[in-house]
Amino acid sequence: MTAIINGDCVDALGQFDSESVDLIVADPPYNIGVDYGNGKKADRRQDYDVWCETWINLCYLVLKPSGSIWVISGQEHGADIDHALQHCGFNVRNRITWHESFGVYCHNKFGRTSRPIYYATKSKRGFTFNREAVMVPSLRASKYKDRRAQANGLKIMGDVWQIPRVCGTFSERIKGFPTQLPVELVSRIVAVSSSPGDTILDPFAGSGTTLVAAVGMGRNAVGIELNKSYCAAAERRLRAMSNAAS
Image (cartoon, rainbow, N blue to C red; front, side, top):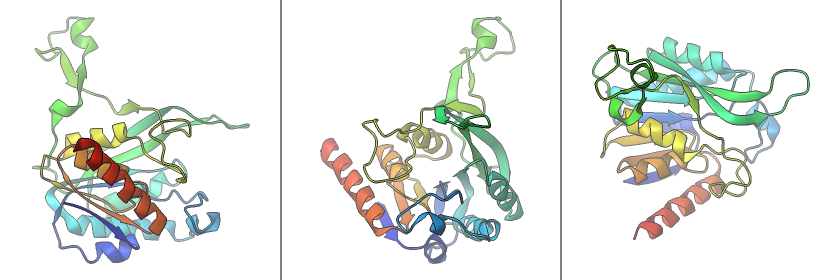
């Protein structure tokens, strides 16, 4: 099952059945003036912290007890996301640093080459975490022969992820969309925090990257997107994916 809902996430989330979703992947507006179709001012709101708490609380209600939420944020207002997750009852397990390989050049401060990703679960125990999906070679085993290393020479990867952002020249880039997550990044999240047949929700679907990653890995996917043209772009992307597979 794949569905894209055109509408405001707060309104749409209120229509979901409680505890009906296994994983939520959210990349909300960063409140820094990005034009998502209604002008740059539309992305700025004085009540950003209150708004974040509103939609995050709704996410808490629709998430199953075994579910997880991952929120990708900008540097400027990440603290609002962090606080809202905790205040709404989530257990923040990691604050991942996504190193984008290269980022925004700045004239009078350090260049922005990373974004925070907040990983939280609804319950302290019994949540889905597929550790085999995020195992990497361990230097403790290969270089130092440390007996504390796992027998297979692997370990769970660290909390800094180096994945290039999707630039304008990349074949993955969807024309006309101002920001776009790499499929590699979302696929890692889907792999570790869900199982085949689970339902994945993206409250800010954008160009549909979460849906593409989820469907490609045998999950059900539901996206909510305010911009009608972005919904159409995501649908075209999913159709192209389906046609390529048939």
